[in-house]
Image 1: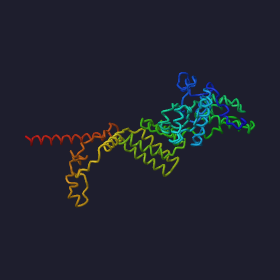
Image 2: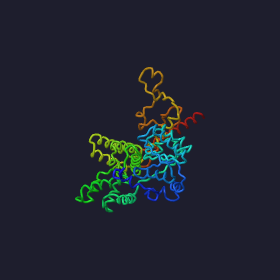
Image 3: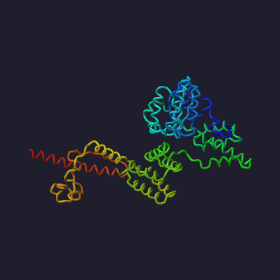
Image 4: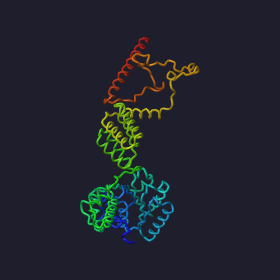
Length: 437
């Protein structure tokens, strides 16, 4: 096949480890993967990282290093039949005295049964498995497979590393590209070498058609226009970024919170998803320290539903900034979790009769509501000493207000009520002792 039909990324693929750019944290002398390649003592592994960081190239270099037969599968297009064919090829290679590297691209797309199908062949040495994935193996691969492979995390390439790759590629592209254009392409690629090379190749094609009538800088700018920052709506980038947004709000950093919000919207995230998470932040991390945060978050959600973008996004941004600046408390969140633990471990004690409603004559005869103290009829609207838990369950304290925002005043109020309860218990105790005497 003519080279002109082969993508540039394939034409300049490194032929040796010395030509490989990036991932020095894995390949430098003394690092596990680097040492394995240098000694030829390779093992089954999963390469986890963003697109365009060299996963396929690295797998091919591993096979080259140990003179193994390279058998490639894509989990997107392969099923049981293709897996069996690959295993048969590996067996043939083994009979010929040759090692077999089975490379599975997008391995996370295989289901549990298909992943389990590799296990016996990894264990008996029929294949050395190298899987590539852009998704977190902890969530996408089953434990049995993970226990048999090493997981290596590949990082996005730096702009300088992408420029190095582009310089090498520019030598075979009919384009007199300058350093500034290379850096423009590298920045737009966002750490993805394949994207950078595709843009360079397209720029070369457009430049050839223009026959010098257009400045190269304009052509490059046109090629990279509309480049989208890395954001996988259902993958790790999505959850990593919403995690960063939540932590920035919790850490009272409105600027960082706005940055991550803008990143998510820029990447195509549904603003309503962020609005829902801001409501969670208002309850989990602010709570009663500033109850207005929850109302503002709900209002922002409503604005997004009613008006859409960009008005809704601005309202969400307003709620994010308010939540980031508000006094923080997770006291309600912790209290609810503690109550849930008690419920899950404490059985189902009945509601005391005095706390039950008595809507019928039968319920009244059975004693429902008898002895209930109506708080509004008590001094200061508080029935001191009343027990609202099941009778067989001692009182619990779940809610510990923090000394910030409105919750500091709530804490003072609850402490006053606890003191009244304690005073009543002391009086009742003293009366019982006096009666006993």
